[in-house]
Image (cartoon, helix red, strand yellow):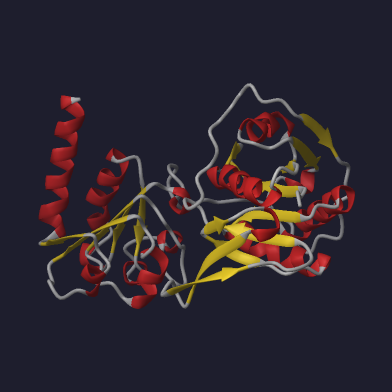
Length: 325
């Protein structure tokens, strides 16, 4: 049976996040030929609607309001619920991002639906669709099937490939007026501690440092390597606790969960809490002076050596390859 599916398009600094396009691809499997309705929330978002359509949405509904300029769970949930009442979808898909993880439980509670979070793979389609998600900090996976009611899922970034962009696709764009009110939280100012660049949770390449970087300056070669590879810099909790970097870079059970194509772990011992946040990366390269370090147990490639010797060599090789090409 085909389904109408709502997909939330997340916006950051005026750009739709890649996970939104991956969510549309997931919605296509769930819809089984049904309609994909993209959702954009903000204070001026209508111009971004064609991007969702190009990546597979059949039409887009926007809600524009000054209180939606910055994310709040109260404001966004009011807008989403208004669209839900108008559209009456059979399924909803969010990205499993900090926003999606905060908003989805609130919305699912209001519409009295179940919620399957952190989906990394989808098997089948329509009524036979199975959702695969990690459990026990990534040590095992479970397959979940919805037998009745609304299908509500969040999808982990970098796991379900987005559809090819097709700018020839057409679809309607409509707006819905929602009176956003009774907000318990008002965002006055947003201050970003991290530098501009690739978003850590969506990066295809992540270069992460642990206590072995020894200082804030120790992250500089890691940043250079990440920039050369078009990736992002991450860190273990140990590095964050030591004050070498900001906690916004933390990867692990109590930080961000990443699944890049390439994960380079430099000076990271491999505590189980850290592994929970990166062990599903496609290719893992570990650099550590200790040959018995736990990180080598999950690594595809291991380099036993001083990261301050290995990383500069990697940078030189990559620069040489770029010049040669």
